[in-house]
Length: 107
Image (cartoon, rainbow, N blue to C red; front, side):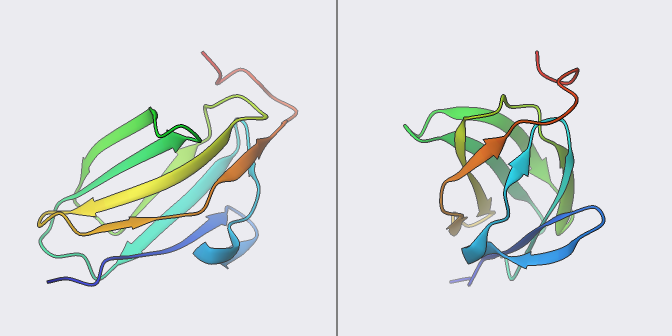
């Protein structure tokens, strides 16, 4: 059994923040997502809305971090989830996406 931990989210110029105290996410701004202690090399990373629907699926990631340009609209509550190769799950609490100055990344 692994002890997969979603370590932190951080904004490009702010530094790491504790995953339990998730910083606000801002639409069209980059956020660094890091994790550790997963079993195996492959991690599946997804972003869910407050109803559990998958809004973003990064698929399998072979590293321990990923930078995401938040392409989900403001006022959407999301949680991030990582699952390692043996099915161990780690998830953040819900955090609401803030309005940004740039919305060009929103489809």
